[in-house]
Image (cartoon, rainbow, N blue to C red; front, side, top):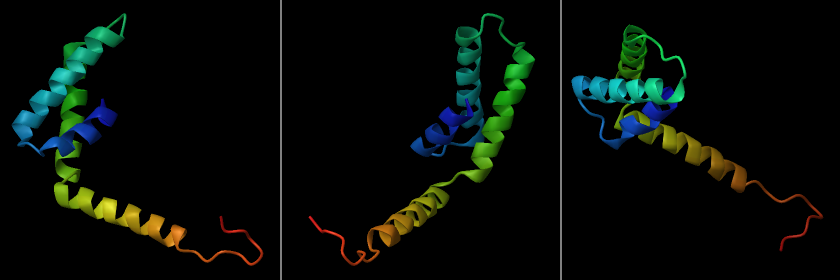
Length: 90
């Protein structure tokens, strides 16, 4: 559920109430389809609320953009390293 939420929140960064509803709907679907003995609804609701609260508080468009910039900078530094003497460039 959290893996889904980390990706899904980037599709618009909705208001908290709408986001909680979406996470709760997904959690309930997972609970009913994935498990032979589903968890009680109160547990599903508590888990969904925790994930929704965390992602809504910690994920933003600006934060994701900054993360992408850091990741891109790491790749740029690695690809610009000098070739070692004696290595073939093809």
